Length: 378
Ligand code: FE2
Image (cartoon, rainbow, N blue to C red; front, side, top):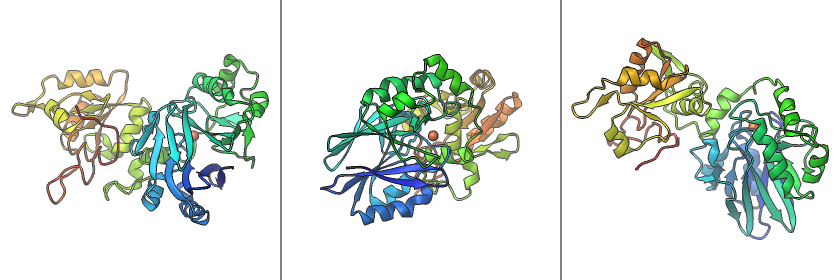
């Protein structure tokens, strides 16, 4: 049994549908938004019930339709835990498995193209298949020069993880730009121009010398993909443009949508500063890794006398500041103060909880949690 291989010509992306021939339960790898109706038609045509959509990583060249597929079919969404796709219902770690009918897909962490990238192994009727995303391509590999990429990590993933799978394993890549559909581990091990018979130093030199242009859609695609492609949840006045750039503001650097702020933080460009009180963080929830620096503090909500010094420290090294409060009011005041101190400070629109709805409940109309971004409660 082989996977169904579908192709998106605009991004040269391969999407795969795997299924159990008896139960008709299916799993879909790396769906593309423009191909939603094609994929739904393929599922119907083959009489399949979609159990899972899975991403190999947060793509920079196209937007996923995982969120829409889940809405249309009832499928669950899964994504590598290290990719920041907070909207996926299952966060995969190395060795985790997804089941569809009697079939099993195993996640293997293969960092390098991005830090969270994964490959997926499927053994069907005794034949082994690996879906390599942008980690291993036919006679190539994914780039390592942005999105937390690392040539060293990719070399390890290729030579120690994927090449250890067995020579007759069929390789199904995330892209091909020359019409090739699949390969084998044995073939790539002996002929892949980037990595076959190359030392780590030779591989790193090749990767460092590629000088590739930025993918055309990166600014738009990555933030959208961190939401499984579901950007309709953004408040109506928060148009698609805000997913890719900040909106200029009076008195501070600008307003940013929460998904874009999170992308900046993950890329190491910005530091997330939570300006709510300690009590709010404790009762309502907090963002792991964010700097806790109250603008005002209980009791009495007096201005925090330590704010200036602490916010300077937070921005040390010239990082942008993205400021988060409950609904985006205190964060504006704090961003203005940080700007007076000479820092590049942005307000995160809608805050952690968003505005209250008609029933005075927060968290249903917008905000950090509403967008499915990472948060925790003690
Ligand atoms: Fe990629």
